[in-house]
Every structure is written in C-alpha cells, then in structure tokens.
Length: 181
Length: 259
Image (cartoon, rainbow over the protein chains, first blue to last red):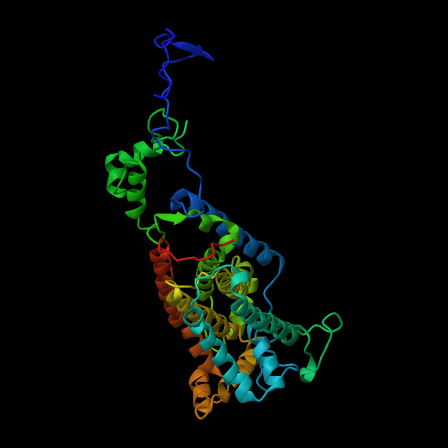
C-alpha cells in the first residue's frame, strides 16, 4: 500500500459502477504480469493458426488448376514420327535455357559444365554462406549473385521458349509463335 | 484486464461441451482420438501430437512464419500440386498402355471417350507445369528469406534433390503422349546427356534403352514416371517435411531480425 492516509470510511462500502459492484481495487502491478506485447517470435498453435492458412492456400492452388484445366486443353500434336523432324525442335520449357545455351556455347560447357555447376552451387550454398544475417540488404553478395543467375536463367528460358523459330533463328513471338507447353 | 490468452473451454463460449466434444469423449470417439480432452493448451497439444494426420506438422510455430509474405505458402502449394498429380495420374493410368502402337490412340480415347478424360488430362498437364514453377519459386523464396541457414542447411540440399526429381518427373511424363511434341522434345532433351565426357553415349543409351527414342524408351520413361520417381519424390518429401517439423523450433541465431 502506498497510500496510508486516514481512512475515509469508504473502504468497506461497495461502489456501484456501470451496474456492477466493485468490491475493491488492488494497487500495484497485476498478478498476471503486464499486458503481453505480441512478438513475432512468440509461438502459436499450428492448429488452427497455420492449418487454416494452409487449407486456404491449398484450395486456391486447386481452384487455379481447375480453372486452367477447364479453360485450356492440354496440347496433343500428331502421332510421333521419327522420320519427320519438326523445325524448330524444342525441349520442354524448363530446359529451354539449356537449349538456348547449347546454341551459343560449346556443348560440353552448355550441356554438362553449366548444369553441373548450377546443381553443385545450389547444394553448396548454405555451406558457403555462413553469415547470421537474414535481411537481403545485409547479404548483398549472396543476393546479387543469386539474383543475377535467376534473371539470366529466366531470360534464357524466355528466349528459348518464345523467341526461337525455325533453325533456332530469332522470331518475335507476336509474329510467329513456336512455344509449346 | 491483463490476461490475453485464457485457457479455452470446450466450446469456447462456456455453455458446456459442443456436440463434437461430446462425440470425442464417447466410447467410440475416445477409442479414435487418443486425447479427447481439449480444455487446456496442454490438452490441445497432446491431441495434436497423437494425431497421425497432424503429425507432419509441429505443434507450435513462430508467429512470423504464419504470414503469407514469409513463405508465400509455396511449399504447401507444391505439395498440393503433387497430390493433384498423383490423383489425376492414377486415373489416367487406367486407360493408358505404354507402347508406340497404343499410347497415342489411348490419349485420343482418353480425350474423347473416357468420362472426364480430357479434364483429368488437362489437370495433370497443367499441375505438372505449375509444380515446376511452384518448386522453383519455393526455392527462390527460401533463398531470399535466408531460411536455408543453419541449422536448416541440409533441408535446403534435400530441396535441391526435390527440384531435380520434379524436373525428371515432368520430363519423363512429357514423352508418354507419344506425339510429335513429346518425341522430339525428349530427343532434344536426351541429346544433352550425350555431351557427358567419356561416357556420353552410354549415359544416353541407358536413358533411352537404345541409340534413339523408341518403344524401349517409352517403357523406360513410363516405369520411371509412374513407379520409380513418384516413390523417390514422396520418400524425399517425407524427409523434407520431417526436417521442417523438427527445425520449426530451432533458433536460427538471427543477428539482424527479419523483415
């Protein structure tokens, strides 16, 4: 008790506030501690907090697939014929960057060295980058390297997928379309 | 007052247990659910812990990992697409024979005569492309988040393996319709294997089952596509998820906070 002044006679008189009787007020900090500040490192139960979010993400993904599947039919060309080589010959889109590299570089470099280096580089990444910094602006070297590779790869994929026509010559996709999915 | 999280009662409103809770506590219910009491957070954790379906998840997770911008939920999306591929793929398997004489006409039959055949084939095709995108995007997101850092290095490595398996799944499936698209895409794709030094031709022959794409290749790619690679990818994914669960509570010793 901080206030030890003379009794007012009201201590034992219940006070009515807002229709409720207040029996007493305890001074000092609350027994349950101060109001907790919610921190991003606090833990929450996975059910329901994470699971409902995952359920929504899953339903969005499935809905997207359903809509695309209703709107667009999967392509089917004419029956395979080993005698008739289409021009251009195209690899699936996720290998388009490699195919584009094969047209530019020596096959040993484009077909073996580059994909091998990418895979080994990706595996080595967490063992090379040991800093305890997480924000991209504190990891400039790692972020710049990764972003450069990513952008180059996306550009090569788009070129190989959309901008290459007969004899692997340059075409504008809005004039001739040679991409297949 | 100052208590922010009070222990929940069964129904959350204090008017007795809900129908679901009563079902849980019945003789049959309690034989199914090992921890039917859900009064305190500890009860609820026990209920989570003893559930087979929930055991792939940790019981608790850091609040920051809940938000969309933490992960863009790309891991879940990749997994869901894998599920969609398994479901649609099994349906297609009923109507498909992997031989040059049958494959193409089977696809035509699937598209014209099989109930929902065209739709299921579309789902399979587009899910496959989306899964390649989702897995690649997942990897990029994990990189920019720095989530591959200790103690999660090895799970990143497993993720790289999963990316490669996803590409192989997609590539082996690409041949199966046995149309011009498939035939020549696989011819071009496997030509790259021929550039491997010293053993190039042998590697290519092992892949194709011969010097060129033919019936052996189709059978090989089919078996890889429906049996070998799915088993590998699901097994690897189980390790990936198990490590994710185990690492959920490890401190990553962040020195600069995160955004």
